[in-house]
Image (tube, rainbow, N blue to C red; front, side, top):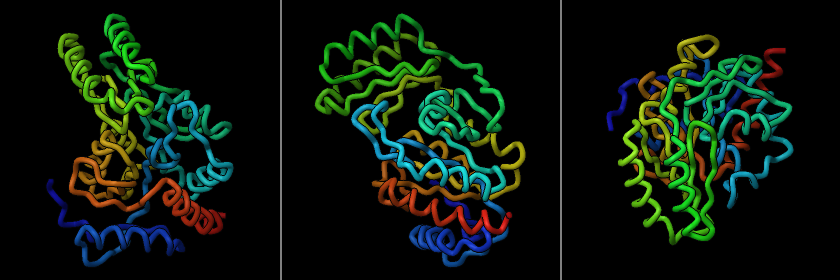
Length: 280
């Protein structure tokens, strides 16, 4: 993977030494020798496995009581240049973090809301057809513990409760997607397979945000934990930004910045309060 020679040039929000410390530590692991802060930050956050601990079922995740106000403070601190970029549908993100609404991309970039109070726009995409949905449901039914999550434009097959089913599911779903021939891709995540449009990824969402204020011209940082976040990592790196993986490395050479979602939340808490006091 190509690394950018300008990786030693980054921006830290003034008055946030904890943010500077974690970024400097990250860059040191990546081989950068110095850090020069010269641009305000644009922050992109995955949700499951990044902000929230992964649960056996997506609907069972627990949102810590202090996370909603923490996200709200961070969004204000960054001048609105913070977005959630998730595999979940935006309606599900709004349910999790209610009453807070943030700029968000859902279903791996298939839908996007550029402003907190703005409309949710669904991109032209190849959806998962009814025949493929039914075939996936039959396949899941053959493996006790496997669950289907229908997100609208994408379909997730979760096997966390039946890890032994993973190899068989992956092979069978690959064949189904291949036969469908609708421009779909099968994405492998942590104990989940997702069927989505092959052309649209989390990188699509990052690019859309970076084309407009308040994100445009800022230093982009993407924090994520799963294989599908690699697209977001590559997108911010193309803009001279920073990829910050959570947990064990997946397919790339990037080293982990945070060990757990709790570490991400702790870092986010240190980012917000100083910035809010400065802006007030």
